[in-house]
Image (cartoon, rainbow, N blue to C red; front, top):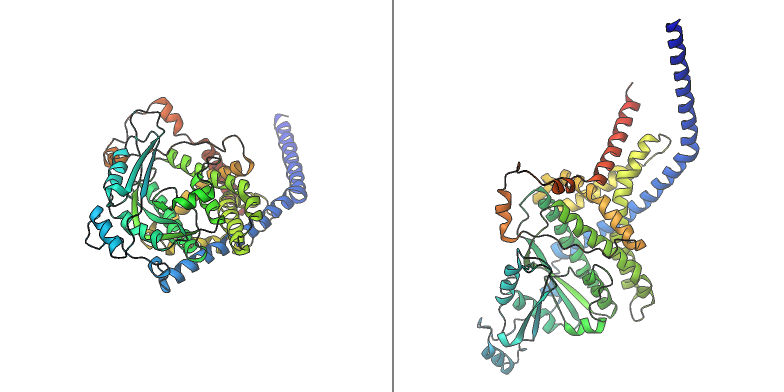
Length: 462
């Protein structure tokens, strides 16, 4: 009797399971699949837009810079300031004026700081060591620190001004000379190596192509030299977003000024060496750029005296594709839609969109990082992890939600980088530090991806 009862329950459960499965199949086919297929179509369109933009920038960078050698010194006039004796004092200035060469212009060096006690001496020391007449240079330390012990970042070489200022002196239309960042701690850990790969692509491709084709790119916030009259004409600095440097660059470009990127001049800087610091930095950069797009889109369209070509470049390429589509697509497509499509067999994704396009983008990035080819698989994984935070930051900026103006200073290590690595890995952590190292959003996404993999494995198993 008990066996019969058990068999009856098992049969009823099986029948109930079949009914649920059949009902889910109907709902899935009629309601879920169309929505997911629509999302696939949107992602395919965004993928095409993104790969064309990446291909365009890579082609310009390779052809213009590497093949045609359209270097800054060939496109713009550059002559040394002074009499060429190597001295940079008042006597040289008078001799230069007498000989027909331009005198040394007045230069203002600004060092902003906010609770950056580890490296402030390095930056101030580097600024004081710049080769320039003492009566023609002003160094300002802009300290907003709440901590009595302060810190700053970036260390230019002593001849930095001698190399950059001539571009401004001899080319009156140039408002900004931007130089390249060189990372002193890129080999601290795997995360800093991956950061270097992404930022090297930014400088070698995005900055070079923008400078070469449009005489415009986003100011990086430091390691650049501005013409004061251009800043004043654009309306000065504004704190309406967390990317006041990009804001100033866009407004200055709309006034007709040109920007020049010089990749051969490098300034030492430091990469975030902890995941927490890197997340805060990426949120600030991504959210601020998207929010600036929201605030300036109408202004760009309405601005008179600006060519349609420049407006199109600003609105479509610089903002829409790179600051909106790129962060949203990476997470939405590869971390949400593709795993969901695995669970909805009625949905089909073209191979060219799921394989060929991301492969092409990866190859174009790898071309400019030949020494890091062995790290490309890890770079892909890390970029997908960061895509969660970048998409959330982009949406925060576009919608102006609660954390749109969140500003957390990027933690630095300074000269203590090597000492930090010698700390035993098994050193006990405080409870608060343990909690900070548990990343809930990443774990949730990881479980979701794991569920898709398990479902695919169960479905394909005979």
